[in-house]
Amino acid sequence: MSNSSIETARHNMVEQQIRPWDVLDDNVLNLLADVPREEYVPAGYQNIAFGDLSIPLDFDEVMMSPKLEARMLQALAIQPNETVLEIGTGSGFVTTLLAKSARHVYSVDLHDEFIARVRSKLEEEGIINVTLETGDAAQGWPKYGPYDVIAVTGSFPVLPDALLQSLTVGGRMFVIVGDSPVMEAELITRLNESEFRTVKLFETDLQPLRNCLQPDRFVL
Image (cartoon, rainbow, N blue to C red; front, side, top):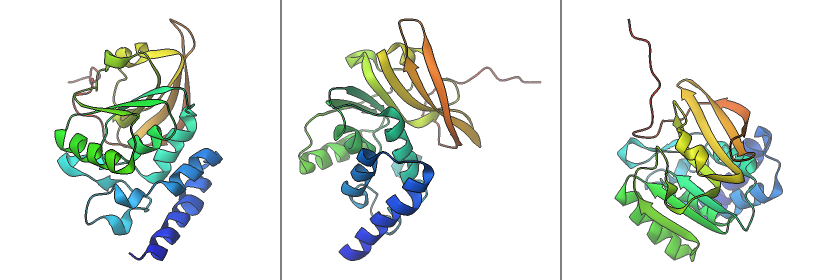
């Protein structure tokens, strides 16, 4: 794609996909317009980098659609003094969006290859407020907690309590909960030591995290 084609596709992504999906926060819209998404998608997928679809990654993982990324950022309303836990580094695109919004991001992924690739990309972009680690955070990652924000880039059939307990009071978590094909995107806010408020944002469908908790299922 030529530079002009890329910029047209990026503009259309924001104006025709993201804004019509009730993303009206100028900070989020500007961020999606400024960060070069095409540089984070795998080789061979640049021509659909701005499409309204999930893009395949290695290890049968996926990159969320642009409008889902945008709704997550808008819901979390990250402040410049806040710390973020990202569960699922993936391509590193959301990691970069979070880093440009927060004081510090702790991002965890199962796959060394993703972490190495994203570390190189962040160094190239001069982004220094991210700590990348290989590990399994599907049932929590208390190492650097508590966190002001938790962003989960996969879904959970059942939300682990350990993640809720990793939020600061006033902290927020964006998470997609349920079973395919219909799941709920939720914004969970910690009100005090024992109470949480859950707002159901929209229905969607997203691949579950590896090794996540499973519900007790009735078997005949």
